[in-house]
Image 1 (cartoon, rainbow, N blue to C red):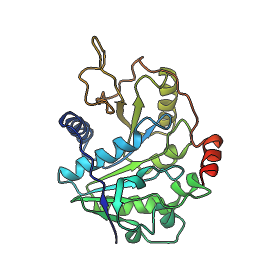
Image 2 (cartoon, helix red, strand yellow):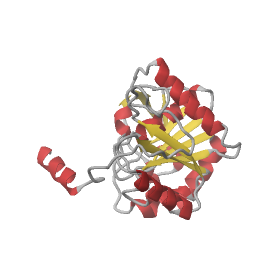
Image 3 (cartoon, rainbow, N blue to C red):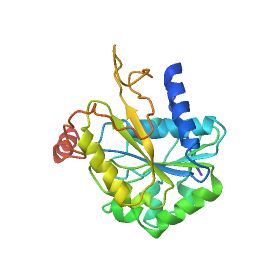
Image 4 (cartoon, helix red, strand yellow):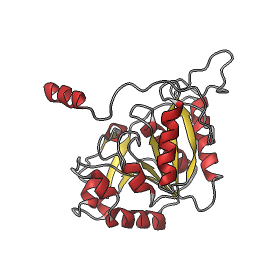
Length: 254
């Protein structure tokens, strides 16, 4: 089994309490809710951060937790580990190049294991809808108390809908002031059409001020969990997921 050390990041008391609140709300969603996917409307809303710390919160609470990085197109999770060589990831398993036990990575956080995304594949949606992914979730259910899956933004690609059929519920992460009300509803409709069980919405990046309708502020970059509240306080999204412009910039840097 691969092993890594998680990069130490200090969260203040209010932020930690926010994740405990989110964890408690998930626990109250039902005893059969064990495998949970998180998605967002667009990139940059903090979905991966919320997913990671939610999973870590479950582990710190004593639940044997597996975090699966299923954002095969543009993973940011690799930055979360500070040492330990990673050879295999989710893509390797889904493509038939490794077995489940080989891609599960043990961390230095008790009860917390991770499956990193692995190399970028040419067919992410097909891999996430495959029998091997279904089998991986079956194995995870048998060996863990909680499985948190970080999936790509649904406003950009369809991967979350494909993966959701193997999950017990989906949580949307919505960035306050960046996503329009109608766009958020469109994403919700996509999940509804796929018969995905929406557990609720995390309103993220809330900027608290006098007279704010958001309630207590839980840290500069983290929002409070509001159940199925969609609100009217979303702005317009600027930018594209995995844009060609970004690719060209990356090429120039390399």
